[in-house]
Length: 135
Image 1 (cartoon, rainbow, N blue to C red):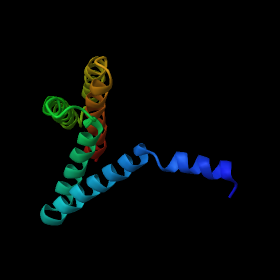
Image 2: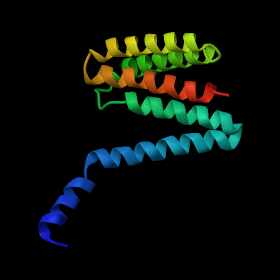
Image 3: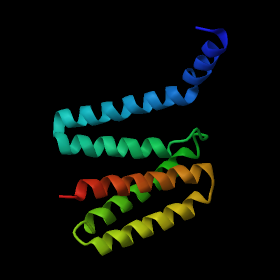
C-alpha cells in the first residue's frame, strides 16, 4: 500500500471516535443481553434502549457535573417515552408529543454541546418508543 494511502487509513481508523463508538456498541449490547438473559426479551430491549440514550448524553464532563447532566437526560428520556406510549393509538397525539419533545430538545440544545446530548437522548427515546408502540 502506498505511504500516503496508508497514512490516510491510519488517521481515519485510529481515532478516538471509532474507539468510543465501538465501546458504546459493546456496552449497549452487553446491557441488553445481560438483562434479556435474566428477565426476557422485552426487558433486554428496554435496557439496551436506556443504555443507548445514556451513551448519547454522556459527555466527557468534570465528574461533579455528570450527575446533573445524566439526570436531565434520564428525566427527558423517560418523559418522551411515556408521552409516546400514552399517545400510541392517536396519530394527532403522537404529532403533539413529537412537537413538544422536539421543541423542548431544541431549547435544551441551545445550551451547547452538553445540552445537545441531553436533547438528542430524549429524541432517540421518543423515536424508539414510537417504533415499539406500532402494532
